[in-house]
Each structure stands twice: as structure tokens, then as C-alpha cells.
Image (cartoon, rainbow, N blue to C red):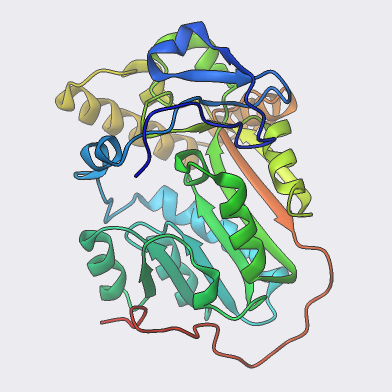
Length: 311
């Protein structure tokens, strides 16, 4: 059982902690060796259970998000060889449902009965728990996805190694994670809701995310930083659920306007271009490729399939 104590740097393994004063109540430190920002203590099982016991599962998303999913899938077409895609930490499986409509063979991993039921209702092959590469044939996936997951993990380097094992040579790893060096963080400061112990344990910037991928010889294709979250600017660490709902509705309305008004589309493209140029967007969206070229194979990637069958 983990106990509170010093945590080695998740990037370089050094124990040379420099306290980040504005987030000290969340145990945030920076590494004196590589400058990675992370939580410098190991959460206990009790802390993690108490936090995640009622962690929400979002079983529906907006049409704008569905559009973003399909744009992402458009970009994945160039990597199709085995037609297999996996989402590590797939939530309710909505992204994978969109992928299945395009003929992908979809797989996911997730925790919690609500997520498992939702995924199985969508016909997704889901395995409960952490990604275990022994459940799959090595190198059998064209694309491995991980949306807003890597920041939660005590040992992200080990997770990336597991992802790389199941990714075929020439295949793509796509990850999203908050950008610690974002404009939103600079504006909000210590109230930035992304910094939240024990939910988030790692805080990446483009440089440290690239360094993490390099530990598995994954080659960066694109690392973008885009967007500023209205929710994080206006709600911060507030516990008022009604306020959160109101801000979420306002943010969704703004997203719709940005999609449908030509002038606002131009404003959005310009703003995202500037945010990305200076590395200041709230969200990092990174694509990495595993070196080598893949060969089409006809295999069932699930080899220990006791729990992965859809209901």
C-alpha cells in the first residue's frame, strides 16, 4: 500500500524537489534536474479511493465535440493498417463509438461499473483497470489514444512504455493533457482548477511531454497548445455546482457560436494560432509516431479476453 512520502521525478527519476509556492497546498514541486512539475508525494490508497469513488462519467457530449472527434479520426486515416484503435481511459466510449462508425475495430480500458456498462452498451471491447499489454498482441494497434489521462498517473513513463508496446511500428500515439504553462494558468494563478491533489499528479508543458515520449523513442509529429477554458477562468476551485453548470452552459454556447459564425471562426483560428505559436494554449494535443513501418497482419489483438467482451 502506498504511503505519503517523497516521489521521484516521473520524467528523470531524480529526487531534487523545489517547492512551487503558489501550489504548495497541493504538494506541487519542480524537479531540480529536468524542471518537470509534479506532485512530490505519493497519494495513499485511501486518498485515491475517497477522491475517485464518485468520479463522474460523461455519457453524452456536445455536437461540437463529436465534430472534433471526427476531425481527429480524419487525421488517423493515414495510419490505418490493422484497422485497430484503442482508447486508454476511454470513459463512456463516445469517441470509440464514432471510430466504430468508420469501420475501426475499437478497444478501450477504463475503471468503474458505470463506464463499463456505457461502453458495453456501445459494443466496445472494454477491459477494466489499467492498461495491461499482456492482454493484447504486441504491435497490433494502428492508433493508441489517451485523452486527459497522463496527468493522473503516478508513473506516466511506465504507462507510455505499455502504450508503445501495443502500438505497431509506424502507428500513432495521440495524447491530450493540460498545459501547465498556459495563458489560463497565468491569469488564474493559484486558483487554477487543474492543480488539484490527488486528482492530477503530473503537470506537463510541450518540452516535458516530448521528453516523456522520447523515453520510448516515440517521434513527435505535432504538439499543439490551443484554447482557453472559460470554466477554469470563471470557476477556479469553487464548489458551487449550480455555478459550474451555468458556466458550462455558457461555454458550450460560446463553442457553438465559434463553430457557426464565420467571423468568430476566423477569430478562433487566429487566437489558437497565436496561443500555439507561444505555447500558451490551455490544452496540449500531441501526436507521436513509433519508428519503423508496419505490415498488415490478420490477428486478434486480444489474447486474454476474459473481461473484454461487449455485453
